[in-house]
Length: 79
Image 1: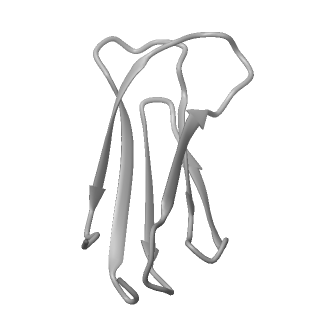
Image 2: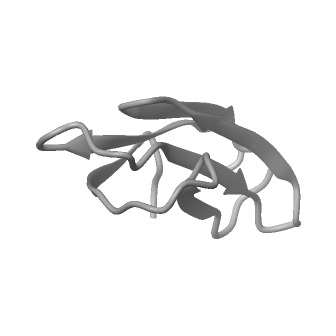
């Protein structure tokens, strides 16, 4: 919903692996809210500028080959 503060977190779970999580948030109007990455976790906090469906893209932040397990948490969003 427009005006909501939304926090998106991705965190590696289990043993630290070569996977370096990165998240990006894209608004329903195509606005790119940027990205965040970290060795074990990444956090992106936005203020929604419009009501609609937002896309969260999870990828790796480096070019190395590796896998990992992660959790994705979204707080502050409404249906």
